[in-house]
Image 1: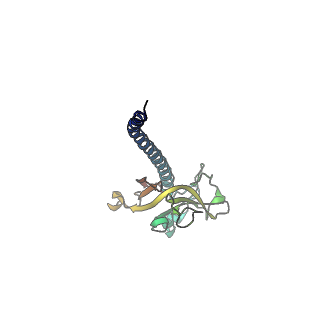
Image 2: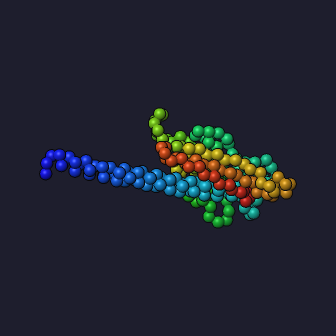
Image 3: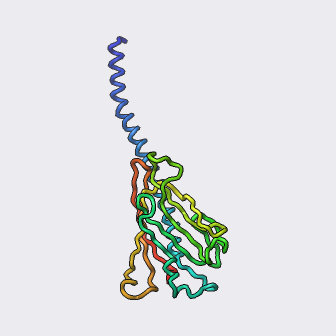
Length: 216
């Protein structure tokens, strides 16, 4: 075989292989993007589950220990939304409630006991902060969702739940029943918006609405 024939053969092989290599690279990129997307969806669902559970617990009062706090200014502290206090202007959410007769957990899975309360109220909070230990100017995949709970001395402790949070928005929505004059017995609605990111190509917006169950 002559040198010319070898060069022609190599050229033909390259022409045939290049589209296959390009298609393989594109397929690998899409597979990586799909896996990242599924991971972010899973993390978002976990965050919604924890925050939704906290909203439903807000204001719970054990009938055995119930007092007259329903009729005082204390009720306004059962659930609080603070605007633009976190990473990239994210909101924060915090709730308080009495312990039930069953087994109660905080947002990191600790079993709640009287030691983990303050003034007989359990506390849970959620805020997005800049990822710890990352130097300024370093590209990161969003902020960290922080769980705030009480330790055994009743002090607030912060625990990182997950990374990849671009922003967290919490909106207090008046329910139609409340607006229609049924009164304070109607549940309060909270719309939570999350944007998850991998810090590069994938940015996904999520939204859920949760209703209180125990607010007076």
